[in-house]
Length: 250
Image (cartoon, rainbow, N blue to C red):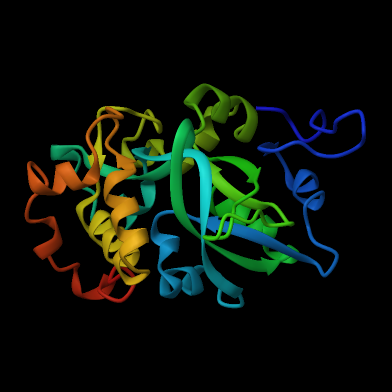
């Protein structure tokens, strides 16, 4: 992926997708009114969840993003903190997206203040941030780019985000016995998967079917629709813990 420092073409225009490595890169895509667009593909398909993270968001809407697929291949420490990870069955994964030619995702987009960027960067520390150009459901491209959290690698994360400091890695992951963030042999956290499916369903049939058929396990072959009808059967009937019912209720 091109970096923000090198993504300007000869004509001075930015080329997308554009990697954003630090806060200064984000400044390049803040709109003239001080806003930045965020692209949601998992829990942020839920407006309620989005507002729990970004209370002052505006203009929550559904859109389409081409050239990416959703994959459950991200070990999420927040699930260990909240007591909903199941390491004994490897059901510890949340979602990220990654480039995939020919794939199309139904996503959400909303705007936040540019002043919220540092907190966003801290909260999503282990992801690769890309600026992308989503489309309306009618196929019209948005003028302003949106930021989406995509798959990183453990090597890049340690070098770039942790500045090579293994203690930073330990504080964020190692203390939960996580020695590798990005894995292809893990399964969705059950509570989180149910939440994402319900959130997509609440957006309508288009988003619901897209989530089931364009979201994959780490093998990149098994769709969530297939998973829920086989080894993942029963997940949609399970209630979240009482304290998390609102956060993970779709």
